[in-house]
Image (cartoon, rainbow, N blue to C red; front, side, top):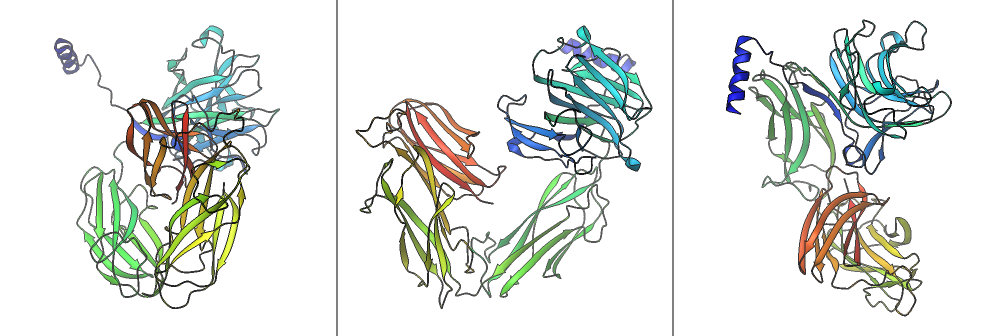
Length: 565
């Protein structure tokens, strides 16, 4: 290996080998966790834009793919595009789900120029119907319906013509007036091609079917090229309210309390120390804090605290502006500002807290198992840890499986008191996992020091009563095999789960969404008997209800998880 490296070095010195600059990733869309990261749009008035769909066994293995349709575009064309109009030399690649004998063309586009309302672009598309071909085309062409630059058929298609719907990777690389086409990472015959019709434009995914409303799927769209020296970009990330000890505030501020505001921000790109610039914090449109920054280094993270502010009663708006005087030329000026509204309450304001909840039978005896067709009651224990004076009436509500089951109006409360609310009887119908949620003051009629502690979420599994035949074998849970603790719940962004295993064996702990789709595998290995703990972060997930399912040796326990944001 040392000899080979020496030979390569000598060839470089003697000019025998030309060094190639690694290409920069300019854009990437992976659809991870069902999220779209790029700004996608469609050139068709009222057309369908990029969406996300769940797909087990997709090319990237994360079960999430992109989706475009042609239902709203007219003319049978569906296109979703991203990037910049002035993009010239780049390579775009994407996995495309190609179809056979559906009448659909599926592919990618590059250098899509929308100037003057004329859609001028290149496309590489699969047409695996009777023509069984790949096509590199220029639009609109002299006829308005496109002109073929090159077609590949039969043995020219790497791997042969597909006989079933399946995923394939398509790629186009364009430099100046030269075009290269790729299929499943193989350069197609005849590349490069010379064409001067499209010189700049967006990249995207393409669908055409004149006879039907349909869709095409894509995965891992990656655009590479020479990014060159990129200008600075200042990004305002987060504002945090701090108490007098400079710790994040758990509760809302009270009148007269000392408050600090903390800005977290990043400086990305750039090639040297930035020019000096100013950061300004405004409260209710009045500047109360200014920092004159002498300049920052590229790709650095920063935290800045304001001076102290004495909280005044009412609703307020805090706004941070980075580079308030526009002293630094940035690639994006739209992410320099973060603005938030917050509420300051009287010192005697109330706070309600859910403390515990459980399921009982009709005699209010706590039960470990919920039997099918039996009546049960849901019990909430809650408290009023702070507050004084009068408070308006508010409701306490119970939802079971997302639907309202019980509602009661609370006319008044006392500070420091504890309360117990019991639902009406609920008949257990539907074998399997269920969840229930209690909400205190769901309509937010009372201004409180905290809203995050007003709800609680728990779950149970309806099983067949002993002595009744159990065709689904759902009644074989051991009481010592369970998810014993979920904290906090509701949570944001992380939740810790403790679980118990009764005997040695392989144990799986998997998080699912409400549609039953697997979201995260927290455990899947051999366990000895004992107590175990794992933490799951839902930072990149959408707010909502998820289920943690624990399984081992034919036993199963389910706990709902409520992610709030």
